[in-house]
Image 1 (cartoon, one colour):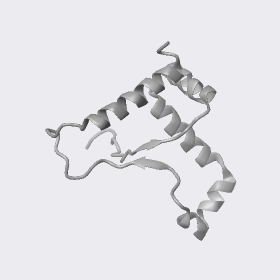
Image 2 (tube, helix red, strand yellow):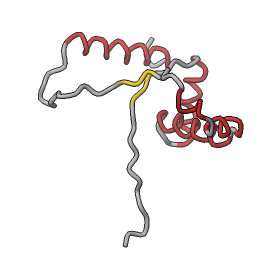
Image 3 (cartoon, one colour):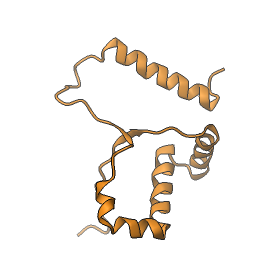
Length: 109
């Protein structure tokens, strides 16, 4: 019998907007913890959700199961093999997002 178990967690990719100062503090906190920014955001939100008593009460109501989805979740394309090339437009869009992100963090002049 193993001494401990590693739970399998299904992760998704989502897009959110943050104030520039919040994004900077996420990066700083991640560096402080020697963790990724994704882990900081995930754990911080889990902590807030668990500690908010009013939210915990809301989760027990029928209305909690009928909320509209507002988080922009990026779905993986279906029926795409690893050998298929990425279309040039998609490559350009990805490069723009990366460059914009780097510029906001101050990595690029």
